[in-house]
Image (cartoon, rainbow, N blue to C red; front, side):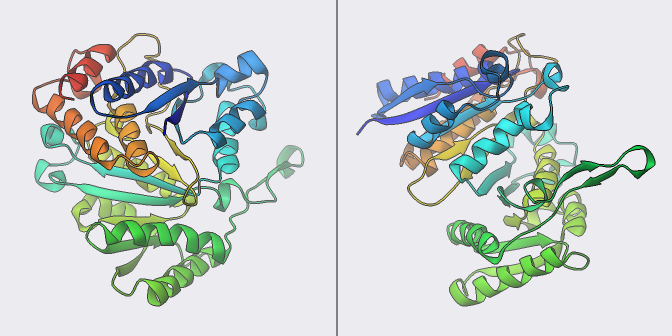
Length: 354
């Protein structure tokens, strides 16, 4: 049965890198038995300019009807003056909530050819392979009440950090299931020492492990200590489970251990049978947008995650990841990796190994 991949190129370098991922789909359709059609919709700032909102009802409906969604990037300085609910980033939050993708998977993996690109010593990061499982639709980014009230010195900004037991358990279950196919180890990061919601997080994660996953080795770590340990001894971790806010911060920190944001994909998953949302984590990079120099590898690796988790083709996900590694091994590099290849040429290098 033909499957559908919805492309949301978005803003900045998003269209450039998404185009290279689309080329990979075309190649796999032609030579590897993949049967995926692609459709494209406006999203983020591009949708604000054309439609007045960052996410139209039609685009959300198309995303929910697709088998998987591959996003490029959103945002840019030209939309910074918009009200919060009309900014490109609001469209992304609305897309995640509308698709009900509550578990964000962000791998931090060091490719052998790039071990010297990390800001840490090679012996610290060689062989690094961490998988973050971040809760994506709750916590302080979505809690109510929120907003800015008052005037002058009485102005007050409020954001509410709130989680339910059900929200915690469903994302923890994803982490435990993924750990079962890896080393069987999960570290849950929270702030149970100073936050009641953090204490609930710890209690519910532990209770789920004890009841349903006794074979998983679970440890708990305060989020600030996790940040320190990521730069001290990152290879002690395998799967890190954490909430929306801490997951946002910690996974970005871990991303830099690998040498470049241009190499890192992500997935956002919901209940079984619903489409996943896949995106590179590098953002819109407006300073290089339109220059044709962006690294497309994170977008291509995000496609690999879509093949693995939504499209039922783990075999092709392995091939795509191996092609990226092989391109790097033969010296293919964009500017962020210290090379000179342009975006399309880097895509060519990956395609050559498929």
